[in-house]
Amino acid sequence: MNLTYNTFRLVLKDTFTLSHGSYQYRDTFIVTLSKDGIEGLGEATVIPYLGVSLDGLEQRFKEVQPSISQFKWDHPEELWKKAHDHLQNDSFLQSAIDCAAWDWYGKKEGKPVRELLELDGADLPVSSYTIGLGTIEEMSRKMKAAPWPIYKIKVASVEDLQLVTQLRSDTDAVFRLDANCSWSAEQLYENYEKLKALNVDLLEQPLPVGNENQLDKSRLKSDIPIIADESCSGPDDVAKCKTWFDGVNIKLMKCGGISPALEMIRKAKSMGLKVMGGCMTESSVGISAMAHLAPLFDYIDLDGAALLANDPAEGVVVNKGVIEFPDRPGLGCRMI
View 1 (cartoon, rainbow, N blue to C red):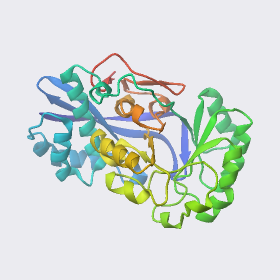
View 2: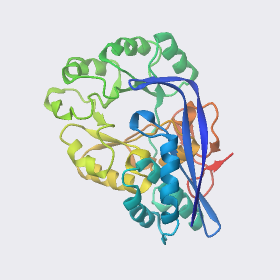
View 3: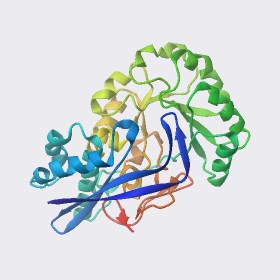
View 4: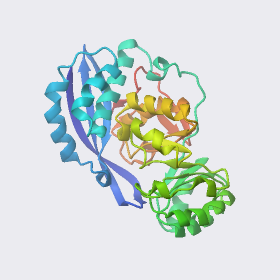
């Protein structure tokens, strides 16, 4: 097995603002896994506020590549377990390698990954489209330019509910709010019932990581689920989230790839938690990987590549929320 990588700068169509800051691009790290004449692709995006840098990914890859390339494996989960000892603190890089292994495995078997997981033909959730925080004019313009049936709206404080109220007059689409840790518990209790009137069907990560124990679900009387994002990274976090949240947002780069994501989904469902599939700002390589798990999710956010002005790859397409798979084995993605 051989592992190589390339880097790309993903330029966004619009400046993207959330509670962690604003950005116009994301750098990304594409891994190519070659074995027996077959190549698989996987992706790790650079997210500075999560401590992920391009230099860090490149340095770590060069450190572990010689060892991981020597591993013998037949199934991606075997490789994941062997690589985990080297990469347990580098979930983004492990995700890129794991997804590349699944892409390789599907191509080897001549089948899409979703078929290997016995998900082919299953119902698919409709994806949301993310509207970054901005002025009402900016946010309204972005919504009109992308007429999707579900919008995930970034908010940085409860005062932003005024913007959400104004946006409601522009569309009857479903709203999902992502606070990215910017609310307090008292602000949540005060504003929770207002969300239902705004046709909000979920609220993502209202409180900062570490403040979860301030959440008292008995004080939340309506039926809008509270979904953990930053509070839930990997399989070991699922059980603790049940105390404070109604569901978990699973992202491949947070947890380390498709292999641990499958474990997280099983754990969450066994505990009665909702499951959401999320993404970073990613090319069609990363989006294609998550799309194959889509039938397992109650909610999904697969708009990462749709936000880009220069996707270096092609694969799964998300068209106004509808997931469309190419007729190719593996993850169905390829570099352009």
